[in-house]
Image 1 (cartoon, one colour):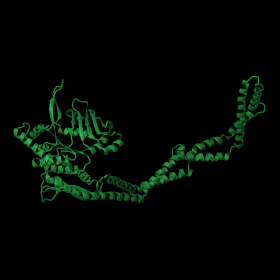
Image 2: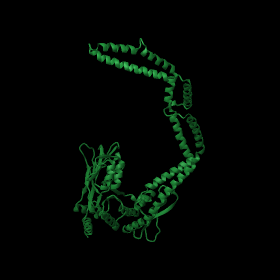
Image 3: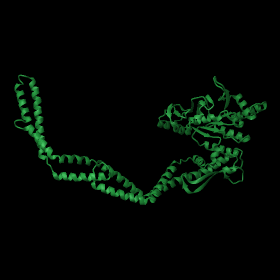
Image 4: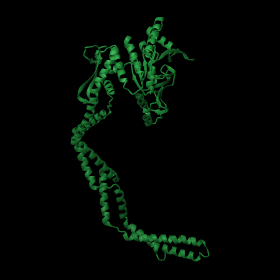
Length: 560
């Protein structure tokens, strides 16, 4: 999986650029300020770095950056989970407008900056020109060792957070016992009072309906008796009248056929009225004013109303109120249970210590291996006799990152005691140490594309040649792109790109604008560029001959 292509439009001082990349070791050279690092910045933007409206080229409305990589089958699951299509290539695109608004895409589907960063971490390893500065930061040092050890600190971090939460809950409970007890007593009294009533979920509606019905029992009985009489009165009742009407129609239906249908309708009405009368008699047999039941309902509803008024809630909400108080009381009981909280804290501590001890063991095993690997790389970078050491010092108290403090120590000469890297190393030495670490740790990464942005600053001569050889060695197995000012490094490359800036003036512009461009060099172009890097802008015969000699030597070395 390697970088195939990058395309820029209106990025900083680049109007438009499309650049193809090859496998192996590629160098990017050019004058200071020509825009070499701009390409790295653009690539990082495409991979989710923070968007900045200041990166939009002057006079343009938005910038557009895209990067195309070889497809990787190992990323198929990640792409599918994110809803992105997988193909024979992986295309990342980012736009930023003058208001700083950013949009991103992965294989043509919208993507967030976080998704671009997650994918970028799998695609590229970028080592910046100030990488040495991180060697004095504890978190960076720890991250390097953990990456070298191949450990995941996520479980430790989760265990640490769980432990801190348990400690916080225990401390809070201890300091708030008095107030918690008062709150528990208040809730217990309220719960007991309402629980004594034992309000059912739908009881209030049923009570109201029953009370209304019994309190109006006599009126209901009178209504039922009157309706039954209206239906069944011998002379003027509805049933008798309907029956006579049916008989009259039936007697004449042989003369008028339409009477048959009408008679059937009336006969159905007679049947329905008869059923209604029967139901009324059944109701009257069961109906009773029942003053005792009415008194019971009055008392029950009075209890509901009394509690509702006391707690300023509608009666129907009493069951929910009781359930809420019971839940609060349960939570307070848990907070007040110091024994349980102490056991929880101890269990969380043991879980953290288990993860921390496993991590400490892995770090202890990896530290001497990393020390040896970096020390060996230092010997090749002009620091003969120098020694690199990863020091592990136990912490007085466990921390979020583990049980030990990690520091990088270095001695620049044979026989000297390793000391803190920031106190004994010069700027040039720090750059070389950072390069040694970068080379050592980069071999372990999953990303197939490595980018070194002027990490060779502060070195020269034979050391610079060694740096070039190291990068060329890395380029045999992975794609390596290096931004450099060193001709020795450039001469070792398999491919050479040169960045140049020029002044352009469009129609209607008051002044010329600076634009940057990139060109792929052929053999003669490489000789000219290496000669410029050796002798300055004026390429002499001597510098050109030296450049051709360097390139010839590298070619012969590569062939052998």
